[in-house]
Amino acid sequence: MTSAQNRTILICSGKGGVGKTTLTANLGIALAKQGARTAVLDADFGLRNLDLLLGLENRIVYTAQEVLSGSCRLEQALVKHKQEPNLSLLPAGNPRMLEWLTPDDMKKIAGLLAEQFDYVLIDCPAGIEDGFKNAAAACREAIVVTTPEVSAVRDADRVIGLLQTREIQPIQLVLNRVRPRMMANQEMLSVSDVTDILALPLLGLVLEDDQVIISTNRGEPLTLNGSRSPAAQAYTNVARRLRGEEVPLADPTKEGQGLRAKLGRLMHTKIF
Amino acid sequence: MTLRDFIDKLLGRQPASAGMARERLQLVLAHDRSDLNPELLEQMRREILEVVSRYVEIDLEEGDVSLETEDRVTALVANLPIKRARPNPPPPGADPSMATV
Image (cartoon, rainbow over all chains, first blue to last red; front, side, top):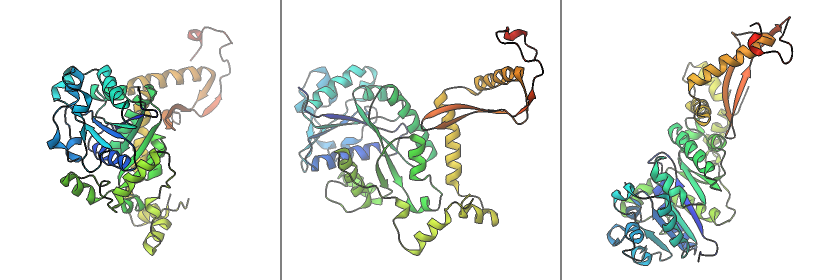
């Protein structure tokens, strides 16, 4: 039996290193804190890292591999987060799983998780090859993560095309590593540039934030301890929007009311 | 053009890079999305010009056939300035290969 309103969501980007795993960890914790039973599944069997970002790397006994082969039950493989028991991790198995894993295997794992959890977040590997295809087969909706850089946006576009041909719906966008000052100086693609080009609804906007690296070092996602940092609030807001709450998105370049901000706006007013 | 672009031009500075990023992306995505290689696109362009010029005399220097993309829809856009109509266009239903080009 499937949990009444289970949502199985693919977190993908095409390009590596844009923040998929960080988003999965922080969003997972934020959803769990808001009371939703949440599972995160590391589908990056080649280069797994979700365990590390969640600080759960030393508590793994079984993985998705043993669940699939039937040598353990799902409950035995799930690693429950101690501080946030609404969140569980299903760790990725051995990299050699890549040789035999099929889309049906992923569907089977996701189906098992869907029976017990309100939200299942699948951390997709980079690229558009088998790893992506397997993970996408198990999902009904997707979040595409990108940064305001040409290569990341181009790769995101490829992934969006593939998701659309698979009729995955809705597909929403999280724009990561936004630098407001560069945007205000027009040295970085603007928020509307990216949303216009990719033609996706914006689910969240995450500013570049040193706290992300610091929290990664500690293995404690920013959303875990009520951090007031901009990225922590952005991730929490992504979770709230995902659950249907209306949370306004602030334009990062229009935050300031000081002279500098006003001058910045004047400088990119269209004159002809 | 924004005020910033104007001042940059006045001072001979490099324009802000976001505009370039946007233009380069739009071009590369139009090609990515259509999945046409440049060779095929060129062949299609030649054939379109050939067909159109059976009916009207077009300015080949000014003519342009390119891919544009908006809202994830890629369009083939042909901009072909017409110099004048052909005095004797092929009659309707005529074998196109018989037409004078």
